[in-house]
Length: 294
Length: 294
Image (cartoon, rainbow over all chains, first blue to last red):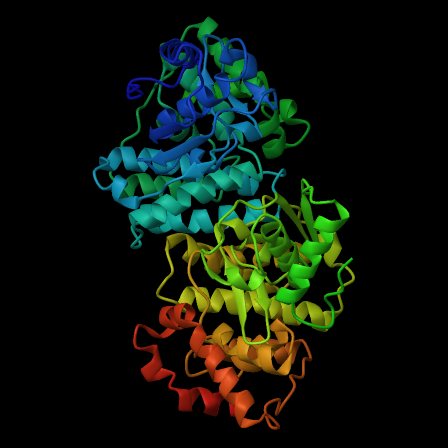
């Protein structure tokens, strides 16, 4: 049992887990890795399945298509819906200096078991924040230029289901579970956008969990997502969610520059969202100003 | 190259193809089967991939979950959109006495390549009929009781795309290709219904290709699909399609009884569509009357 409740999954955690499995099994490989839990537990299971057959630290594989050897087969059982990791080709890990996914076909689960009954006892605010990860995937995927016809369909359907659930139009746990899966599939057929590019900075430096960090960022990005931020504000209200305010008020200059550096590493999502000239739109100054509003 | 233009795929054809591959390769197995074409070519490739590792005639595997050994890996490249076989767990074959799918996880493609440019030169009427196979999958899946939350989402999305294409609301080949895939996925997460149960009888006895047989049947089933048959009639009109009339006017008593028998073999789709008591709703007499209207 890996405790993922207090922080985002870390590369060190994955490396240690891999080493301990190999030690316990005296070098023999397990035949299946099963990830049960929310996005963090699932991402750790994905990363461990890869690291059991690939040398060195998991840090070496954060990026696009860097995995060399086929992983151990893996199965995912989500107990929270929103991250979409059950359908995506990434396993997001943080190290000291960056938060970045192992983006690879090798990160895909071989098998996923989805049972909406597992969502029964999720606290409402956790369900909301995780669900917003999905909503934001749909928004970023559908507004991004990297999208294909599949991504469009998945994003459109997932957006509709999220709206049903979080605008309280009769959406069920079944709807939320399907929304999460399709949201993951939509990002896989497109890219994330400005929200993820900035939320990684918030998580890396301030330690906020991914889904909350997304919400903190999304609220300030109406200029990039004018159709959807107002709907999100309505969702916050209807679900009685109060977002943390002034989270960046005590950050040091060094921290803010690490946050900007982190955002600037996210060239793919930012290109999909803002075009090749994204650095002229989301300048360092602009990024800093946005962070300081959060 | 297998010519599938003149008739539905047959069990004998699959068996012969399997035997000739084994003979050519002196018993060695190919490492990949590639199916390029419309639904028939794709279904033949699926069936051959299974029959290369399973003994006897393909007739023995028509039904639900009868395949014993894992098949040869297979890849599908659709050049027509609608059948949804690129996403489905069936390979539909006809023998003398029945038309029935090899329904099995082993019928799923391992890899699918979808390129909408391949639809460029498809004649309009063929595109229409094949597209209606998709529309009808969506209708049957969404109206059937066997549906789950995934099936609902896929069917809803696919219905919207088909409507865009065939009610001439700006749908593209990209839309049609995605619709077909999602239509296949919707039936996989639900079941077919009365249209497929009756169209198999038309194809088996009168030799009509599947997609046209579906249309001939669907037109007469407004009582079971009251929301969708009127939309279908509108699609026929907008696309200048004239369906064959009086196709059953010369059938013999023996033929009509084979058609009814074929329909009655389709217990799963008919249960999903009409409930456990489907035989009391779609009685033999009723089935005969419907066939005679076609």
